[in-house]
Image 1 (cartoon, protein in one colour):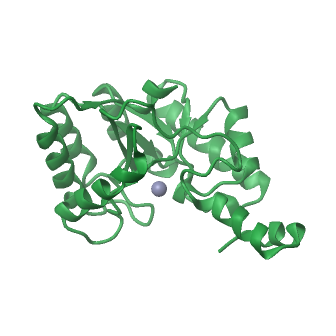
Image 2 (image 1 turned 60 degrees about the horizontal axis):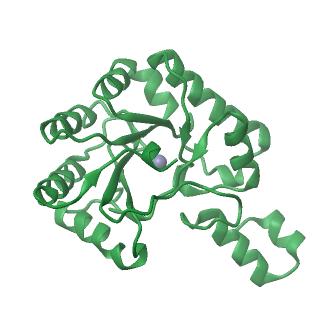
Image 3 (image 1 turned 120 degrees about the vertical axis):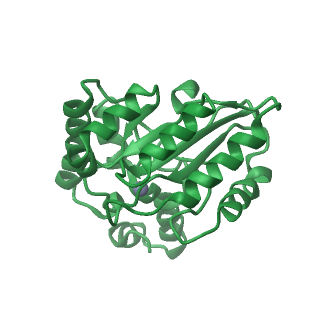
Length: 237
Ligand SMILES: [Zn+2]
């Protein structure tokens, strides 16, 4: 699944594969700089994508509040339009909110006009609901190409990827989500953890994310009495 137009232009399968991977690999910097994580291995940013979700965002907020923990939420514009009050609750609880496009397309495959629409439209939905300007953006599926990063930069958005993921978009047990996150530890070496989780689903409003909430509770509970500090991604800019 790589970019056909780049494949032809590059004229070499190896180059095409490299570029195709760069469009998708969350930590690749080949298409431009993205924010991943800071250098303090004791820091963890819990990031939740694809909300706000009427079914699960509120219980997640309650859990985070009980643990006095702030997180980062990358929201889908059409869900923000659907549930602006919930988006405002996330902000009021002190969390950082970022742009995750209006409809969650694979941006690496979209026309420049569509990319602009998706980024601007989500910013507008968030600004209308929250009354603040937005500074962070996560591309759906982590997929991007130089034009995506350029558009984001023009809107004053820092593009954020991740270096650990729970793979919680599939039916999965909480302990397995935590195990997936822990598996990224050796790769991270001496870096902070930017953990990709989901409080919603781009496929449907109201998705069941109780496993993600339970996994979050495990992460928060086991971090107590350790040097771990939970941060929002703006701590690393
Ligand atoms: Zn997403």
